Length: 224
Image 1 (cartoon, rainbow, N blue to C red):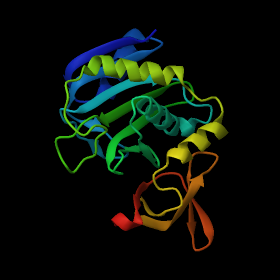
Image 2 (image 1 turned 120 degrees about the vertical axis):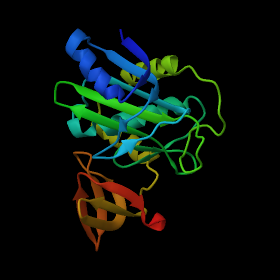
Image 3 (image 1 turned 45 degrees about the horizontal axis):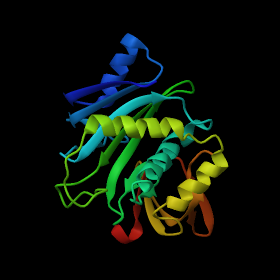
Image 4 (image 1 turned 45 degrees about the vertical axis):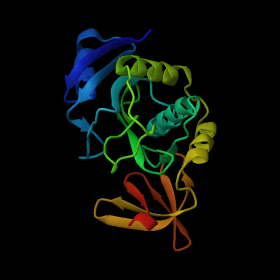
């Protein structure tokens, strides 16, 4: 059973989750909020919330290949919205794209072989044209109930088979076999995104050779 803590406002649901786990140590704990002020993305990036943004964090066991955990969660979140009639695309390593290929969400995982903390931010609707969203128009939402519903769906639909997970991720990938640029530190790699390696790394074909990238920020070359 998932224990849920819902707050009106916080800096980061992951920070609240960490503190609560220290105090209660619950097997399955979920923290959700109405407004997140300082959400985190990968690296030093920030995730800015809007009225239509759903932000929540929870603990879970990692995928059996630890580095596939964020990829797994992105597939399951996409599966959830497919049941609602919405088809998301996935961008390596941890982003969600809407049907117009604009970023509408992201997933951040932290932890170890024993337990991971997952933070998910999703724009259900957007009041800023710069950002993507799953739905086209604002609507009244119960963020507490939605966060719990999605978290329960994730827990009930975990992947045990990494090969199947890789196949499902690639099926939803928004840039498979397309020219991309990946920035990793001060280096920029450009080539054709050809798939995922055994550790979830990006396989980029550069000058007829496969380059494997384990981290970085990806964008379509056409968007450069």
